[in-house]
Amino acid sequence: MATKNASSADGGQKFDPKFPAVQLVKDIESELDQAQVKTLGRLANLSVPVVGHTAHSESVDAAIEKVLAHGETSVLFGQLFSAAHNGTLTREDLDQRLVNWAFKIPALKEKIEGLPEDVRQRINQFKDSDLQQEHPVPLSAGFKSPVSSSTAKKIAVQKAAWERQFDLDKGLAYPNVVENTGQNVMYVEKLVFENWGETIKNTPAVESRPCLTHTQVTFIPKSIVGVQNIVKYAKEVGKKVRVAGYRFVF
Image 1 (cartoon, rainbow, N blue to C red):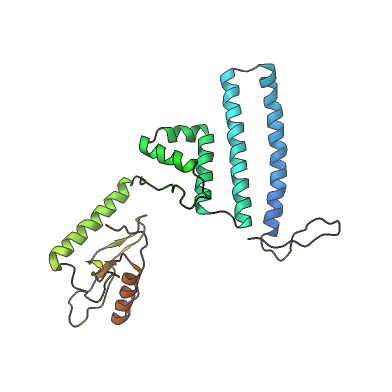
Image 2: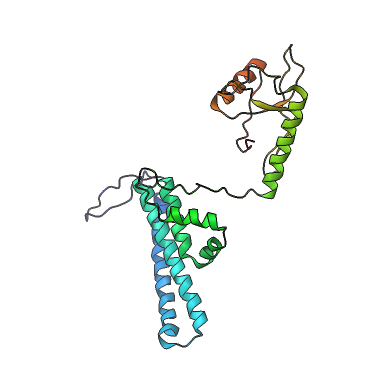
């Protein structure tokens, strides 16, 4: 958040006391001043072995790398904060700045160089892409992030539950709950709800209607219309809807 600062008597700027984070900003400014002094002191100390050749070359090289990495990180976030403050920071710009920064940090660059060839090619294309073009190269084009073993297991459990449900009733038990294509929304009856952190577990309940015998169901919509029809159905049977936005479509 930002507010217009009032001018002080000497023509400078002063903080608006109505701004709730005024003290936080003042504290950060003070801490940054102190950090700059400490950084200059460390650089002065490092100049002794650099100029006098009084330390092992490998040690000096490692120290210089850390100084450069620290500087690149400070520049990166300074630029990001400035762009965000001015309202010019886009998601693509953020991603590209982070990628270019990663190439300047030795440890991160090493990780990138260890990626598969096709992934590295896509990253390099995005890194050098002109974001002002009408169709810049998207970072996600051509590859997907690997799925963790725990996530893959959860997806497999849900997929198997849906397949069992389909074998039972062909997925036609709730004819009014449809997607924007007219297809029935996927669902699994008596499916135990569990979040990805495995800290919450329960079984969703739906009151049965006279024409149905089902009492518990989890819907898995793929469209806005599907969500809308789930809400309508829940209203019909007098139940609330709990949204689980972290379920995967399969």
